[in-house]
Length: 83
Ligand code: SF4
Image (cartoon, rainbow, N blue to C red; front, side, top):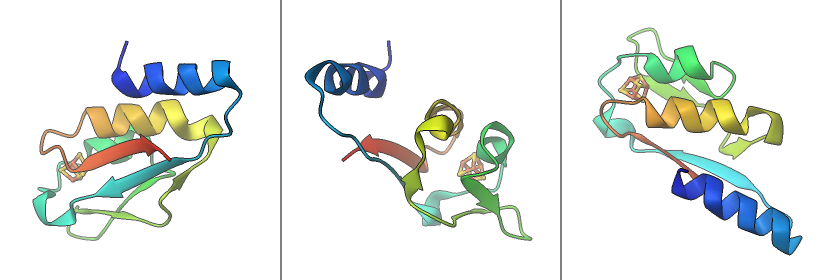
């Protein structure tokens, strides 16, 4: 189980409201576009193929896709965290 999934599960068990945030080290993005394929609602692409974020808040219904998109980035640009 991925660490973020464990943390989310623990917070659910504890009844703690959770907010998921995504951040990006944009200077590391190489424009592979894999994140966009996994979660186009969160990971948008510039015309040159590099990523940008319209929002840093991840809705619950997109959490799994957002984590998948971050996990598949070969440049480790993206991080999804529980705040
Ligand atoms: S997968 Fe990573 S390197 Fe590729 S566009 Fe997304 S953030 Fe950039």
